[in-house]
Image (cartoon, rainbow, N blue to C red; front, side):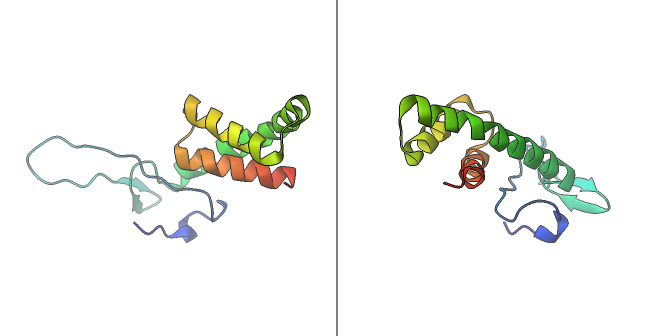
Length: 114
């Protein structure tokens, strides 16, 4: 599914936009959509929902910077190992989707300059 990124002006182009799956009861075929500002989107992919998810993930990445610096110092691990442990931890806790977890780790790496 192609996403028109022009509908998401303040969202970085690498941030994952992931519609949530939905099911509608009944015999007739149905299409689950959400209207926002006169446009229709898949559930979970409206500009306001994506903006909220992006803000949460950006905040998460900002919080991971001092955490990663501390872990690197305490455990004497290379950058790659710290980031791999971070990704595994986020994925295990399921705080965000797998694609968002990868984005958070990539953004954390970018913020750290690693």
